[in-house]
Image (cartoon, rainbow, N blue to C red; front, side, top):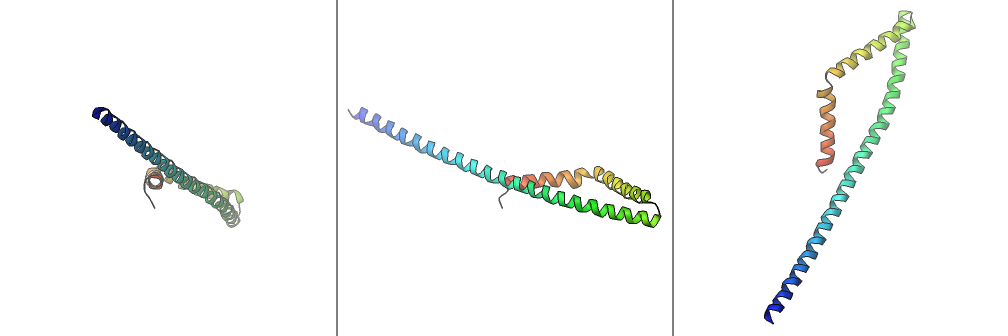
Length: 121
């Protein structure tokens, strides 16, 4: 009878251990889901705020460029020359940004993404 009692104790202990392990794994899973949800929401809000600020910045840059092009056109007595010079300026800036995109654009964006997801604030 002693063996049967020990077998029941082993079974009960194994069941208790399995229940505790299941509870622990469920808690870890829920914690991971909540952590991922928080980081995803933070990243999404960051992207939305950058889009809003980028849109406003683009509109401001557009009107400043139009004003400068118009002003240059008045000074050069040819609106076409003013717009051409502003377009040439943006073309040169675009080429320079294309040449240094890895150093000044891609690397900071990747670093910001990694920082957003893997480091706690």
